[in-house]
Image (cartoon, rainbow, N blue to C red; front, side, top):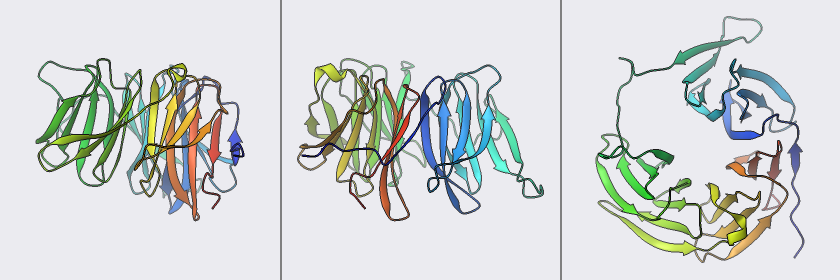
Length: 280
């Protein structure tokens, strides 16, 4: 079998890449990239050129997450500080950004929820388009609630060690920890049921990131040693192993752009690689 090669590679993100997401501004798609040094930038997914720097943290705090907040408005989560909301100033001829900073609980917060009575620490979360929020906890437990009212659908202890990552597609939830296996869970009306375990090599280290393909038939998993593994969700069979990166995979983003199903791989090794595993 021929070894997969990346479609394109972005180099030189100082400190390493902590997160990425495809966002929309003025009805155009952009690749948003956050780094562990506190910089967030936008790139064209078509030309791969940088279009703007949307935030630089003055204290070099890591960007924990970036994504779409509302139409033409993006959020940048700065670890242990704030959620920054960034939008285009349509009154400006230079497409200048307007920035709002939210650092604490305010009256504007519509809802607030804590995951556990024993104050377990959030480690990972995933929101499904089916209306549920899955929370991975430091105790190795997964807790699933309805987004609308936070009523509990179910909870289950899956690992003896902390949950590191989780991802959702429809009613299927994938969860990982510091050791094998990956666990696939089905979310039902009033319960969560373990359906399958997918093993991975001990030498890979912990599984730090997960992402389903657009159709939900494949699951990509990123590891501490820089490898990415792609498994069939139905059978668990391995489809591909990507060993391009040399350090921990911090984020995986599988999305469709211009008819191509692209996998974006973000690593601490300062590189972001883009893969077309379907050869679209």
